[in-house]
Length: 304
Image 1: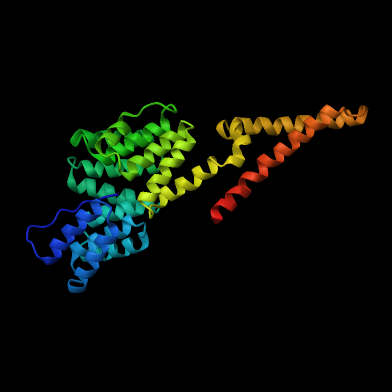
Image 2: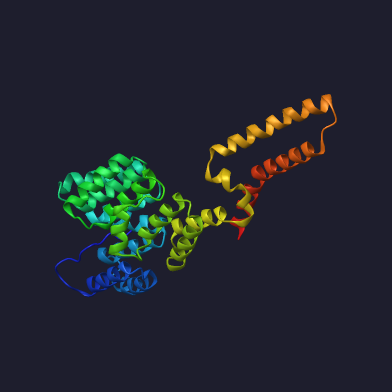
C-alpha cells in the first residue's frame, strides 16, 4: 500500500534520492529503489526522508519486522511525524494489531481535522479488516466526498461489495478502480475475490497467478493462489456440490448414518441385495474421501 510523503522545501542530495525512490516505489520497482536508498544512506545514515522510504520499501516487500523497526526509530526522533505514524498504522493493520492501528489513525484524524480523505480511507480499511462493513462504508464515503477518485477508499468499498453483495453482482467501486488502473495489484486481488465468490474459480485462480507473477513478494496474493489451487484441483471435482453449498456436507453426513442404520436392520432381517451393498459401499467410500482427502491434498500442495 503506497503512503506518499511529499518532499520538504529545500533540495539536497538525500532529498533528491528520496524523491527518486518514492517514484520508483510508486511503480513497484522496489529492488531498484532499495539499491538507490542503500547507496545514499551510506553518506546520510540519519536522514529521515531516506529512512522513511527504506521503511516503505520494506513494507511493500512484506518485511514488516524491518519496516516497523525503522519507523519506530523515526518516531523516537520525532513522535509527531505524521507520515511515519501513518506508515506504522499500515504495518500494525497488516500484522493484525487492530487496536494499536485504530489508536494511531484516530490520533491522526483528531489532529488533522475533517479535511483529510486519506486518513478516513485508512480508518475505513481498519474497519474492513475488523469486518465492520457498515462503518467501513461510511468512512470510505466520507473520504470520497473529499477526494472522489481516492483509490484506497474505492478499494474498501469494492471489498465491502464483494463481502456483502450478491455473487456475480457488479460493483461500481470495483469498476471505477479497474478504469483508473487495471494493473493495480490491490484492485486485481479484489477482482479475484469477486470471481471466487461468483464461483468462477478457474478464472480467479488464473488472475491470482498473474498477480503473483507480477508481485512475487505479495504474501496475500501467494495465499490467494494457494487457496484457489486447492479449490480448482482436479481430484476435488467429485466434491464440487458440497464445496459449493456447505449445507450439503451436513446432509451427506446425515445420509451416511441413515444408510448405516438401514444396513444394520437389513443385515439383521435378510440377506442384503447386491445393489444395496454397492450403494452402501459407494457412499462409505465417498464419505471417507470427502473427509480425509481434502486435508491430505492441502498438506501435499503446501509442500510444493
